[in-house]
Image 1 (cartoon, rainbow, N blue to C red):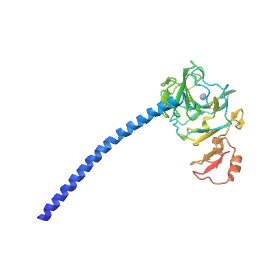
Image 2: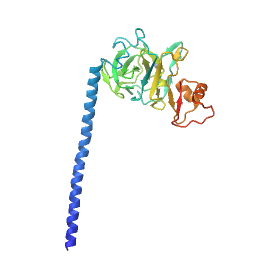
Image 3: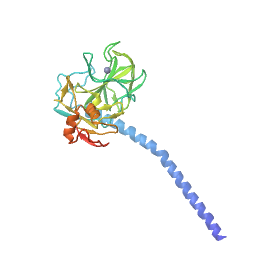
Image 4: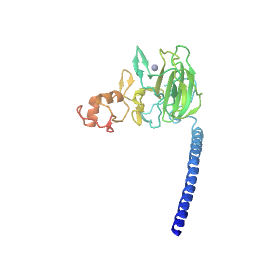
Length: 286
Ligand SMILES: [Zn+2]
């Protein structure tokens, strides 16, 4: 009898303890996301304020001015011999993967960006955190149509053209991945698509050296801009110092992506065209 009584008290004690701890845990769990959210909002707003106070605009040390008046300007800009552009905190501007037109000379004109197939109304996001510099409309069937230019802390400016709707205003701070507009077919465009440019101090760089739309990823964690970059048909090639081999990569594919010839890749890395590449292997590109 005593034994039975003890058993019941023990059970009650255990139940009581469990009940309490479950209750306490429940409270903690319920409280945690609110705390985290508050902290996130807090740090974002503090960061924004700090950014605004510390500098008038992103990449303050690189650019001579902040202006909403023009799309690109090359004059009165001093280009550094080289500059490492950090790409780590990126977001793909669109989830679409089909490139409909590459960067480079096209029908006797220079195509300074890449075209990604998107549909009217598709979400377009900022590639990095930054401050919106230009929100303009070049008009019907002219140029970029409705476009947005954002300047980022890493020194890049990104351009988003042919939009159907612009959802940000000039001088607004945006986070990487923040929705900035909707895909469209405005300006000099046949068929809805996103015209995406990456520029450094006004100089256009092939976005394919940084963004891989097919794989929805960046090519490498950083891209180095060289003032005296190797040029082909007036277009700068290469700039990636290192390339990390991915699934399905071949030397010719890496060559296409980095702008470095297969021969140079072999020479720099002491390999031959017959060498099997390992996923994750890092290749020197310059
Ligand atoms: Zn284009």
